[in-house]
Amino acid sequence: MFPLNDVSAAVKIGTQAAPRDDHELTAVRDEIHHLDPHGSRFAAVLRDTIDQLLNGEVTGRYDWKKLFKTEKTHAGTLVEINLQREFKFRDGVDMDYQIANVDVDCKYSQQFGGWMIPPEAIGHLCLLVWADDSKSLWSAGVIRIQREWLNSGNNRDLKLTIKAEHRNKISWLWHNAELPENVLLHMKSTDRDQVFSHNSGQARLNELFRLVQHRRIGRNVVRTVAQQKDYMKRVRGNGGARSALRREGILIMGDYASHQEIAKQLHVPVPGEGEFVSVRVAKADPDDSTQPGVNLDGYFWKPAGPDDPVEEGPLLPKHTTSR
Image (cartoon, rainbow, N blue to C red):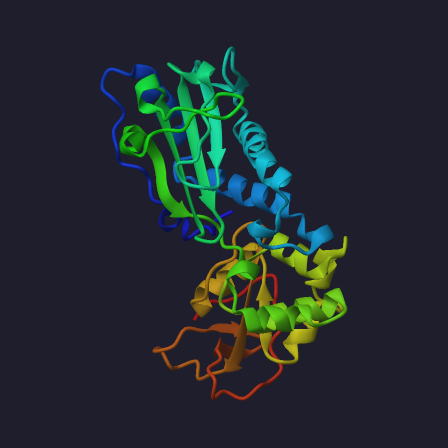
């Protein structure tokens, strides 16, 4: 999920109005926006679905390109199922869902414009969904399918695509919105190689939080790096990464309210649900109002710079005090 203080910046809500005479399309748009005003739930479903396909805990994969062709083909079905589970859409009569008492088909494509429209969807509303993990972007829109807007099909099941010149008919709910980042995919290749150079899951996680600071790291990234069923234990204190890296002055904040408050005071990204953010800290002058910081363990701590010495960091308490 998106962090609490950053939801509105995480997505771009579509501004294209629904056709004036298509009251069903307007009703579907309004219902989806009512259920998910900022698109954070929609984005989380797409993030989780991609991670579900990658299955990093078992396979160690983090890149869509590494999926088998059959797995990529299955992505559309998983998106359809997971959206219905999240939003509790009723089954449709002739299409996949009923949204606002209107039949709606759901089509997903990892390639923008690649939605495969079956002949039976002509005349019906389609919820078109696109996500690209390499670009960290996603879109979702609604369109009523018209035969003259479709390319001629030459595949065996007669599925068609929307002509490029008619994609402007799509009424966007969200367009080019931010997909929660796949950190393993987007980190420096040298850093990624360094993380996976270690044999043990614990050592790999320690290296991940050491090298990837000031960025939100999702639970599925942790699962992929640890490749162990007890991966969350490898993050916590009492022998996990939080204990090991504290000696280097590195804090690992999770989605607890107290940790989120510390992140805010340190001016680093605030971890959302199922996320972690690491940052190296150093002792600082509490009277220096020009720098962000937090009081912990009787000292004032700031985000460390490259010239600050490495020193053991504070324990993360349940409660913190502001400046």
